Amino acid sequence: MTTPAPSRRSLDNDLFLRALRREHTPRTPVWMMRQAGRYLPEYRATRAKAGGFMDLCRNAELCCEVTLQPLDRFGLDAAILFSDILTIPDAMGLGLSFAEGEGPQFARPLRSVAEIDALPEPGPEDELRYVMNAVRTIRSALGNTLPLIGFAGSPWTLATYMVEGRGGHDFAKVKALALNEPDAFDRLTARLARTVTQYLLAQIAAGADAVMVFDTWGGVLAPHAYQRLSLQPMQAIVAGIKAVAPDVPVILFTKNGGHHLADMADTGCDALGVDWTTDLATARERVGGRVALQGNLDPVTLFASPERIRAEVARVLHSYGPGSGHVFNLGHGILQQTPPEHAAAMIDAVRELSPAYHVG
Ligand code: CP3
Image 1 (cartoon, helix red, strand yellow):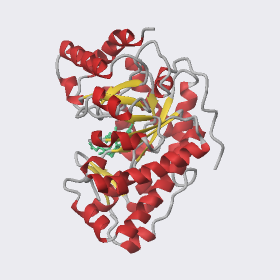
Image 2 (spheres, protein in one colour):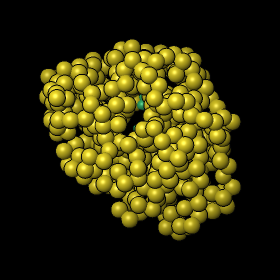
Image 3 (cartoon, helix red, strand yellow):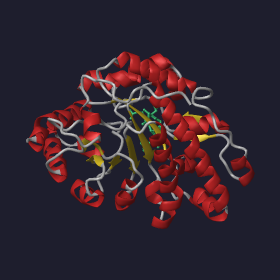
Image 4 (cartoon, helix red, strand yellow):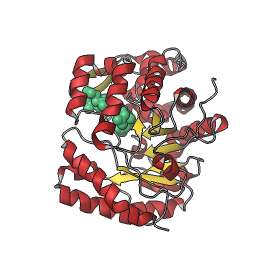
């Protein structure tokens, strides 16, 4: 493994990293999950130049272009690598495609123990080098202006797509496989955890300042199943990153995972993403100041009027309350039909209203 770049790079705007470390900041930093995406006309124009979505992901220059678009438009406090969580299963040979309007699909979903045990562990500078090239290109374009977030999917969330072959509804196939073949399923999540760890460490070496693990589907599991299938592999990832890059903040986000926040904080991560179904006040109580919190405006709020958006921003800031350790974000990805000027209203409101929570 290559040595990670120095994690305490000196940045013009390091509010995001300081908030993740629960250090004092003069205001609350803000970025948006899926901030580069189809709600922006400039994204749609670049995407049209690239061809398909994966063609865009494989083109470092165009990845960089779309990563910078929301920063230029809104002045956010962090950049996030433009890529996808499904790059890893694609590199494992499952045959990823994005049918227009249908979401991701795999041509060769995993169906048997033999297929699980035959899966390769793709190397970040081999099959996934295009992602690292995007990180290097973005890092060099950002210079020392802003932090860059690297990311990956959680092993459980990747496994749901790999077994179901597409986004799930009842997750019957993947849950049945986990019940019928528990040992093989543990080998699958362990293999994904190793691959994700190497992938995130390589993103750090290539210039990411913090990393986030997206566990979009952890919230569909019963509590005991969550512990084994989702949390344990994420814990292995946190441990693997901390062993090599102890100063790089790690954010875990389980959508609909409000009742797991205390256990998630025990993994040794630095911050937790929170969706809008848990109040930040409740979340803060559950984690007892051990980690920073990121969230949690309902993305649908951005369909309301700018005045209403501002009031909802005020509510989120008030819910977290005074003090450090809050990164403002949506509770999930920004929706495709969102008017960009409504996202701007949210960001302006955070800039204007949050300093009152950071006095003294
Ligand atoms: O946040 C960012 O701006 C960085 C980019 C990013 C994308 N996907 C770009 C993308 C990130 C962080 C992701 C993560 C991701 N991808 C997750 C976890 C986060 C979450 O939303 O829960 C998941 C589950 C995926 C899998 C995936 N990729 C889905 C469900 C889709 C949407 C399919 C559709 O057609 O609606 C994608 C495609 C995708 N990934 C798009 C973008 C901008 C849209 C593709 C397009 O341009 O057509």
